[in-house]
Amino acid sequence: MKITRDQVKEALRKISAPGEGGDLIESGAVQNIQIFGDEIDINVELANPSLQARKKLEVSILKTLHQEVYEKAKININVTVKKAPVQEPIKGEPVPDIDSIIAISSGKGGVGKSTVTANLAIALAQMGCKVGVLDADIYGPSIPMMFDMEGARPLSVQVDGVSKMEPIENYGVKVLSIGFFTKPDQAVIWRGPMATKALKQLIFDAAWGNLDFLLIDLPPGTGDIHLSIVQSLPLDGAVVVSTPQSVALTDARKGIAMFQQENINVPILGVIENMAYFTPAELPDHKYYIFGERGAEYLAADKKVPFLGALPLIQSIREAADVGRPAALQEDTLVRKTIDETARKMVEELIHRNDKLPPTKVVKISNMVGCSAIKK
Image (cartoon, rainbow, N blue to C red; front, side):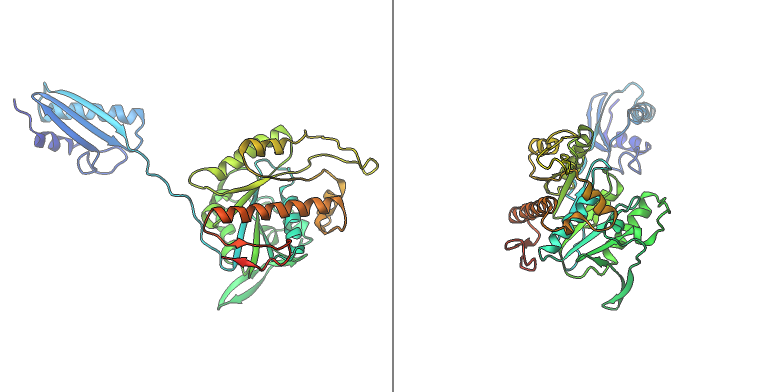
């Protein structure tokens, strides 16, 4: 008996393509049919079939061709998996009048990421920059407390005929947080889509005005909020905060890896080591490495990313955050100088990043004063 290609194709039209929609021929799953006497070779390509689906398909093809074409045909079936399309890097929508957007991240909670964010923002503001902070920690917002804004509520303003939220300003920094819309003892129990929607409102339904820097205080980990941020905003860079403790460093590695993924590709401006060492007031020349010594610095070297600085574990930093007056407001202290140096290094890395990687504006700060000098 002579077997024809048309006979085989007609038989295959009676078999549904798993996960493709339509039959094997209509869906384009059948890539090739070769006939050699009573022998039939078929190549089928599917999108990531399970082993069970693949075996079921092979049985269906054998049974159908034996019934419809020739019961003694020798049938060879080769099922392959479609190559996934190369995903373009995620690019968010630009926010008008904001020159540089920096995410402050940590893999682990409790490493002082929000404290670092607040102090970096104030340090930049005191250098003459226009700075905003977006508290993206939907489930545990702490920025309002650190800026002495608990109980504050943003007002509505008209911008080009559109009603928008006006960020609340203190210490020269504009702030928005979900904490402004919840009670202190109220838990935010939202699924990912609800949290994402609220976050996008804080970003795009706000009248941020002209900003040199928008710092985004991300929640710990690598989840929905992080993905929403990189999808919504064109981040100029990310900073990872960690203590020198091994447990924290393990999670910090994951945070760095998230931003370095090919489809995200956000430059790491650097790593900041928080709670690096303890110096008691009565022994100012002594350093006690309670959580380990230089762990985050070694991590930065290992991952080939900049190390921005080490902030000490000092009681005054905690007390300042708790009363809503971050340590960067203090004058002529070692802590203040360390924070300023860290902020300066972060901006230097941002300028270096902008010189190498388009497209963002290059922020040029002469002696870290006069943040308005911006070159496209």
